[in-house]
Image (tube, rainbow, N blue to C red):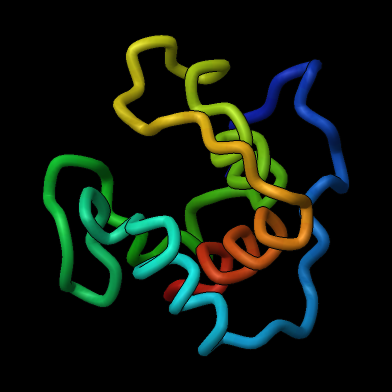
Length: 99
């Protein structure tokens, strides 16, 4: 929760009401995050689980990492995606809600 960086924009993650069904579809089908990450105990095992993200990850950090994984880890397997802000916010809200 405390991982921060001077270049990380504070308040970039706009948490609020969102369609969990739409977010789940985006994360699993459109972006295929569960190919590498476990979500709800199911999915890939080659990357960290997203289960429990709500209690361990800062939402602004999630936003920054999803937007540009290589900024945080130049060797990260996760591809940098060109996501519009609405899709990025949907993904961030979903990950930040995972218990």
